[in-house]
Amino acid sequence: MFTNPFSNWLSARSGSKSRRKVLVKQLHERDRHRVLKHFLALDNSDRLLRFGTNLPDELVEAYVAKIDFSHDTVYGVYNPVFKLVAVGHLAFAPRPASSHALSSTTKDIVAEFGVSVSASARGLGIGSKLFERAAIRCRNLDVDTLYMHCLSSNQTMMHIAKKAGMEIQRDYGEADAYLRLLPPDPASMLREAIDEQFATIDYTLKANTRAAVKFFVPKK
Image (cartoon, rainbow, N blue to C red; front, side):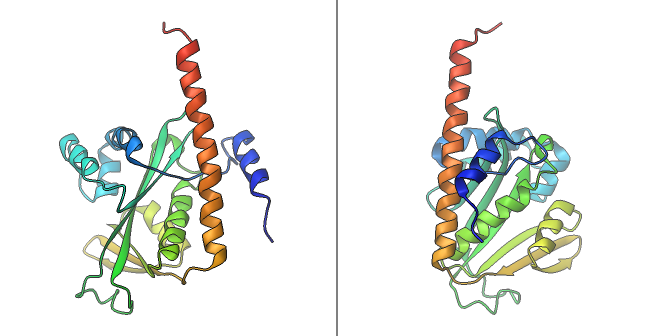
């Protein structure tokens, strides 16, 4: 059964932290500086899990500077005070000819997904919601294989992969996970549109509220 999306959005706005609905917004060029701020705030262990190595600040800055928002799809989750607390990066690339796990796809393009969630926002299912948005995006672009590469010790990514039913291959402390996706259909198209619409409304309200607070509340 379909639920009323407006009711879902209202519950997301009014719910407590433990049950607040996660609204995932597609990010654009204007959000680049917030993406960088999010990554720079990750501690060493979180950077290791996100990038597979403990990247120094200058390499994190180089990574963010190279993100092509017009080619890849980047998602974010903003908390009630308009702070970006999670980022999902969905990158599209040609199918590698040598990959056994990807040999069954007939598409020329595959997608790779990476995600990071701030410590203050964990335990709310944000990583899984980012993955769901990425999977729907892939379907609607007729990409049939979604891929994740991470350290085997990354329990969050492993949980997301297992929950999604991904095929997981482990090798020398690293793991590759693959999910075969169904073709697009009207329901998947509608779901992506509705999710983005209400996330955009929420984003706009938070941004305007943040701007109003900065304008009317004097600095101490």
